[in-house]
Image (cartoon, rainbow, N blue to C red; front, side, top):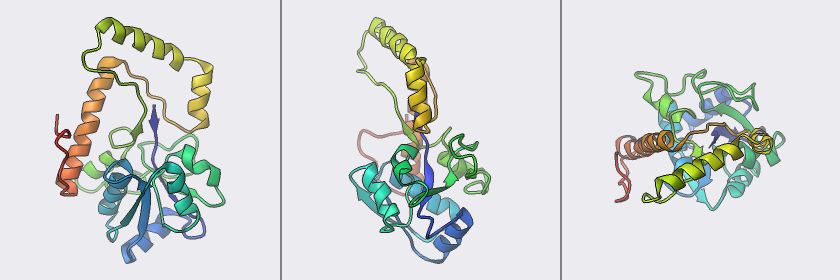
Length: 219
C-alpha cells in the first residue's frame, strides 16, 4: 500500500491552494517534515520548484507526530504528511488543500489534485508526474527480504501476505487510515522499486543538485 501525500496547512492561515500559492510566491515560507533529504523534503522542494514559489525553509524533525503538530501549532506553514498522522488535528487545526495524485482521494473528495490545479503540468509535465501518487515519491509500505532468499521462501511469503491483504481487517485498516491499496507480487514490486529509486536519484541530481550517497544510483 502507499501512504498518499497531501499538502496540509492551518485553516487560520490558508483556506485553499490559491491562498497558499499567492503567499508562497510573495514571500519565503517554512515547511516541516520527517528527516532530511528524504520524501518529505523532496516533495516540498519539488512543489516549490513546480509552483514557482520563493525557496522554502525546511525544518527536519524526528517523526510524523512532530510534523503534524508543527503546522497545527502554527510554528511552520505547511507539511506533506500522510492522512493517518494529520487526522487527529483535522479539520480544526489542519486541512488538506492539494492531493498529490491523478484522481481525488475518496477520503477527501473536495480536495483538488495537483493536476487539476496545474502544478508541474507545464512543458512535458515531468514535475507533475514526479509529484503524483502513481509515479512519484510517496511513502510506500511493503515487505522486503534479502537478495539471496530461496525462491520457495519468496513464494511462501507472497502467498501469505496476499491472504492477509484480502482479509476484511486489513482492508478496513487501509480505509480507516486513508491509504491507497496497491498489491504487487515479488516481480512487479521489484520493478516498481527500481523506478521509485530512479525517481529519487534523478530528482536529487537533476532538479536539486544534491550529491548522492554511494548506495543510491540510477538503476
